[in-house]
View (tube, rainbow over the protein chains, first blue to last red):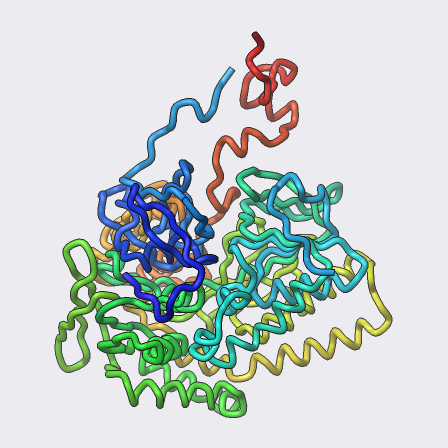
Amino acid sequence: MFRRIEAVADEIGFFFDGRPLRAMQGETVATALLASGVGVFRSSVVSGAPRAPLCLMGVCFDCLVEIDGVENRQSCLVEIREGMDVRSQNRARQLKQGTISCR
Amino acid sequence: MPVKQMTAAADLADRYDIVVIGAGPAGMAAATEAASHDVRVLLCDENPAPGGQIYRAITRNRPVAFKLLGASYAEGLPLVQRFLDCRADYAAGATVWSLQGAHPESEPEIGLTLGGSARRIRAGRVILATGATERPMPVPGWTLPGVMMAGAAQIALKSASAVPQGRIVLAGCGPLLYLLANQLSDAGAHIVALLDTSDRRQRWAAIQHLPSFAASPYLRKGLSLLVSAYRRIKVIGGVQDIAVSGQDRAEKVRFSTRKKQHVIEADTVLLHQGVIPAINLTSAAGCELVWDDAQHCFRPVVDGVGRTSVPGIICAGDGAGIGGARHAAVAGRIAAMTATTDLRIGTDPDCARQLSALQRRARYLLRGRRFLDLLYHPAPQFRAPRDPDTIVCRCEEIRAGTLRQAVGLGVPGPNQLKTFLRCGMGPCQGRMCAPTVTEIMAEMQGKSPAEVGTYRLRAPVKPLRLAELAAMPHTPAAIQAVAGHAPSDFQPNRKESP
């Protein structure tokens, strides 16, 4: 978990697992979560162990979360936006009904 | 005219003369140089803002951050400003997931996702400026929350003015570790210890390159970093192994020195053992790789001006071999001149002279690196972990013991290991485990890493949604192959008729 070393000038609001949190304009979803005291982003696919970002630069895929309904997004590459609905991911994803239609 | 910010895949042109991938120093310099000629340039970058990792968030940082991050960070400002003022299209937040080189009948082709939809575009030349990633440092417990790479903490500092809370332990080797220790200390973070894992035997290998190091700016910079770290931080040298433990997050670090075992409590553990070229896209495009013994990593084979083995693809900056930010900016310009020359556009008579001046400058900026490469060559036990419980492939949770068992059964190479164990087949596509897998196989088979090789990579090199892929235009043959019927009755955007 992280703390800010200076006051945040342009604060915006977002949600993590339904909980309202504050972030700094221009930062990524990953740092917004870390600075809000979120220590675990997801549980691993194979063993269900808790995971959090390792690299913060798009390499490790340990920061995967659901953002505004889209799963498996690398939170370290997505800029935080006002009102964003961010959700933690538990183990493997399930296929969502209705996303792809076959004819 | 400032760069044109592109936010949707549909707004991109079908073809650009030059497409640059990556907005670090090499990519920004390449795009700026290319756009100064009469060519259409697109720069795609994964991150929301330009700068790469080294100059991350430079466009929106405030004085506090500049003071903390020092002069070498502020050096990026003119580079970023020139890029933002240039006449290129700039796609921030774009993920490039495929790249094909030129063929006799076709130009290079790039598959990318921007603003939620996928698109293929063509390019006269592609300049890869994918930069560096941190070399993985697999130790027991490195998957626990609270364990991060040192670069991640620096990114949080640069882009979010945030430092780890509580007790911090830094572990590993190399200049960045000491730089970060100083920056975190200056920012008021609580560093309990810095565990230096440098392999002391490497001093002998490095010493012959001392003269060129002594003549480089790295000497003064390095010494002041070390002095300042030793003055304020408890530095423990000769650390031979490290394990992180904790219930659901990092709580303790166990380590040993020559004399004894130690345990310290920590809330955050920051690992680092140097940086290596990010080669996933380069490798998937089919560019020939070579093992660099001094930097101990694979890098693409490039000629003196950045051309890879694949026609139409040029590689510049740390992605072609670690040379640092200043070198990358020069290499980016060289790559752009190579591209314009190859395309026979914008060549001015002065070009050859400019190019050789830039090449001299690039060589000059590499002075002193060989010494650092050899001195901070990571110790063998941190490249090929011996503790069988150490997770090597973080995605599929494959441990060193399992890997060694499979290698012992006679698995010939890294690609066959995928079939046996799914190692390297998770979402990161081997980015975090490839170097370790090569090292373990080399050690066990008594071969050099060059002989072992590394994973063969294929597009898409970054995950994309099936819906994005399906919504792209497809050839009739591809539709027939997948759907089993003629394309005439295939209408992906058909609305249900009443």
